[in-house]
Image (cartoon, rainbow over all chains, first blue to last red; front, side):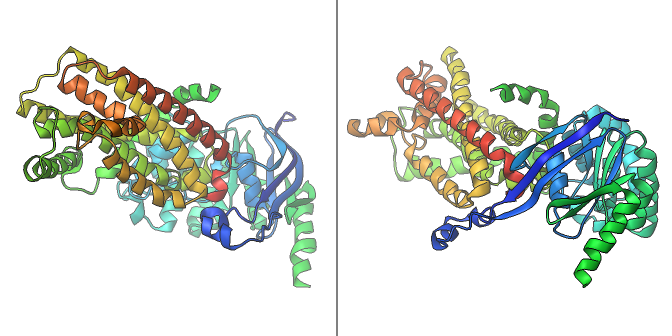
Length: 246
Length: 259
């Protein structure tokens, strides 16, 4: 329980103003003003997460939650600071974005599975469970482009929880899907997460309370509060949500 | 360089995705995989009619169709690989934003699926050779190392273009034009040896000259290739490969922010 599996030290992530404007030389030539400052999505973020902990990340839109998850997942490199991860990392951020729309649901399960480090044979063993959990028995051989958004979410979630990982990142996973599936997903997470390290992002206070032992509150890219779930939720409500209302 | 060996660790990943890439490409067409053979054969018929009946081009004493085909197929292999490489990273945008994986795999996936296509397209070459009763001799084995040089060059170009196009989209516009120009600036429709002598050194600067001419010498004439030209192609290809690889590895870290 006390072995540290995620350690972030002074992580900062700068999105330069030009990144999106660099697509075309024309823009760069016309706009002489080089706004080098850009925007710091994360600034000086440091914390440790131990094995078996489940931690919530709270914060308003644009506070850097998703960027933080991306940095932890290794999808994007931090501008400053260092990060240490110990264990296989899995999870679901940006629901359904990893699907290939021309291929069938089944093919996409294989594709996602191998990206997550499974072998084709290992996927053969779990594919029926994945389809069953996602309740897509009738649709799984259709191309993804014919899937409704709810179906994609269910499939993505089902893949994520059927692939074994030590550290799981979940970003707003339960914000979509109908109520019944959300309930089912919630209980699946609870049984799946035993003994695993979880980082959970949600705006839903009751889900956070059910799943997490402690929480980190982010505001404008900086850690403003760290503590147990109750007090963090209180802090978030009082200091950040109500601050804006005033 | 250590990362080059990690490619082997990811071979399952690469194989599975390459298989899917091929399936996806032909899924919605009626003739499916037959297109791989039909496309170059169609082009061959047109070019053969134009350049052996309408305008007669010297073809080293060979029938024009096999003369053309032996260079046209490798060119089409380069053409489709290089052209698709600019869109490569963006077409996997979803995976890149969501998963941390060994990014150079994407280039190998495309490379592999195009290579399988090329393998099928070679059936067309066999048909043409049979039709003209040309039997390749012992020296045709030289075509294998020549193909290896071509592959090194292609991989280098793919790495370079796929990574840079993520940041500067203009590259995706220039590349098809460049590849089309190469079609006329390489000895595909004409013979390197029938050029006026004073222009031959200029054409030799194109690394594809040694490669395409090599295929002709070895497969059709049963002769060893021009080693000087080929050595130049090899050095050029290795240089491009390392430039491409290091560019890709440098830019790869922030793909997720840009795609």
